[in-house]
Image 1 (cartoon, rainbow, N blue to C red):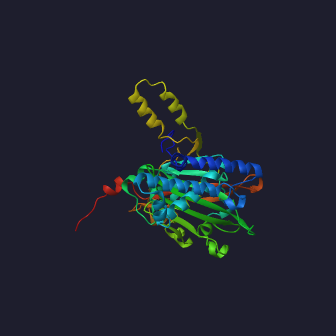
Image 2 (spheres, rainbow, N blue to C red):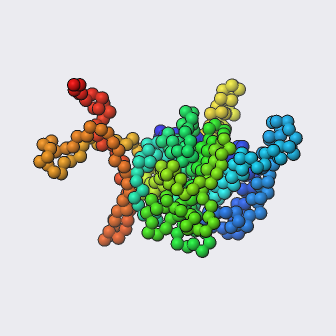
Image 3 (cartoon, rainbow, N blue to C red):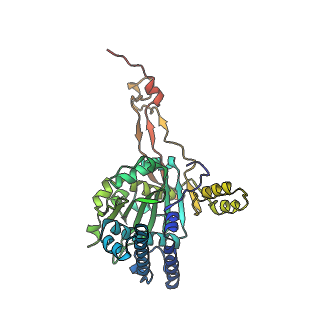
Length: 396
């Protein structure tokens, strides 16, 4: 992402457009949260004794049936009978449930949005998770992370056991990150829930849900390997769905194998926001201003084009993250500590390889009593590509 780039349409914008009725119910639910003095994010509507959730799901599924009946010309009763129980309908119910909770928390938490640059994203994907899990503290109870880097798209589709189509890279990846307290009588830690989605134009393509446990004494790698069946009896594992109607639970092991890169990226992004010197710039949506300017355009053709361009930008204000972060650089050699072995005092590498980044929780302050989280960026070792290409070769 270039400095000053506009935030593209997000999951929030898409759902608000295709399911406007959902916001009527969310408005009622938020009023209910205010009335009962609720603090923090909502793990389940059961926890808040919601009187809104069930009517909302009923209304939205009824709209779904009616839209199929209208487009196909089939009687509504026949559509309902033939659609219920199908994989597509089960996926719809899962998507509606995930959206209700994610968007409720997002609205309730102030719609905090972070747009990560491509360079920073690639750095975070190449950063190890060798840090105490307790240090992973999302900046808000609920926030939306936006990634446009092709490497992030690849990581998401790998977690879904799919390959992205060529045009998938034109559209961002969205992750709702929610910080939650432990359930029931578990008071030894907290949870971080990640709801992942990818859209192509107006179509939702893939989605994932994963929760990790944060425990005192755990490393972040332990959190990524969370096995909920061992922590909570009867606890449901994560969820994966795609546009082709495939929807199923996902084992904890799959999230750590296929989904390792994706969820390491998300948790490293949380760490980056809480580190000692993050590059974060607050920006405001220009969508409303751009649409207002359309009124002054006399040409209908130009006004239509300007309106279309304005609507490509999200209505959300956001924080632009990592605009100044450069690409991962190349370090050609390292100081040679053993001296006598090489007269030039440096190592020369015949191949180029990446040295992964990592985190340090460094002592600082008076008597080194304080700590600051410092990010050691990844880098490449070895020659530049041009050096490899131009290297002389002897053919025998």
